[in-house]
Length: 269
Image: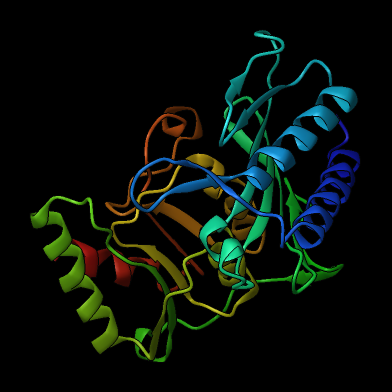
């Protein structure tokens, strides 16, 4: 398969989805509460439907995994799987906060080979494919070269309400350590964009401290980070196995590689 062709398709699809988000921002309605903090809107479903329809037309033999509808197994023998998050940052979108994105990734066998993350408000189009480098709006991007935590910007996902008390306390203490040891800690609440801004070199690391995410939130951002020269693992340092993580919630550390070991040591204290 020609990954550049698939990448161009995904970029154009993300632009279409982004236009739908901007054009319908006054028509958004909450249609489902997944829990007290997680929601789905009519736009989540509308955009997801458009993306799935487009993929089926372009790549009818490929399978699909999407946030709202789950798995669509068109061809059980296919090695290709599209992984979609129609709106990563729905809570921001509904509140007019411009920190949300469309996330589209392609998996071949057990490896993410293509990723696109698009913020329609800022017009930031991040994309990468296997061995093709990472880009922001046609400009090659690379991770930061900073190797000292005291000079590092760290992006953090905060502990959430439904964690067991022991884990909430543990992650809260780690957050305090990061605040004391690093130059700055920032919290934007948008996983895909957090990974992309780490790939861009804006942050030295992305640390998920107790806000577990699913693979469709991370897949596109992970290959963009990797192609920009970064590294991602679970918080204990184990590798992320895409095949094994599809049905689990993930806590990850993603970095410019140079700060990775120091942060892992901090997480294990």
